[in-house]
Length: 147
Image (cartoon, rainbow, N blue to C red; front, side, top):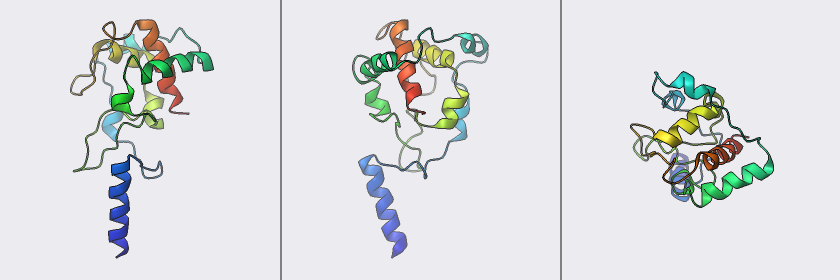
């Protein structure tokens, strides 16, 4: 009986989009770079020219929830959705994952915004949707999910 109640709770938690952080685990695939090996070293050298101020993070938030429509896939809380075998897919990326935040450089994130992410639904956003300047602000907001 208790097992059925827990299973039911997990089912409803998934349906409502709630998944507590203590259950969440980093999928090792998440830590693999999405930038091609012949370009990753250069991308890692790209540094966000904007400081992580509240004003700049807020600019990124407005873009994330508006013009860039990142919220559509990554959610209001930046979690995307959790990989539970048989229930949902591995992507979009969960920006609250501290392990992922630690291994990804800002330049890699900008590269993905410029080029998309092969093998995923992540398309390129620069220059069709965002300017490079706007993308750097979105990255500042994405970083705020990991704090």
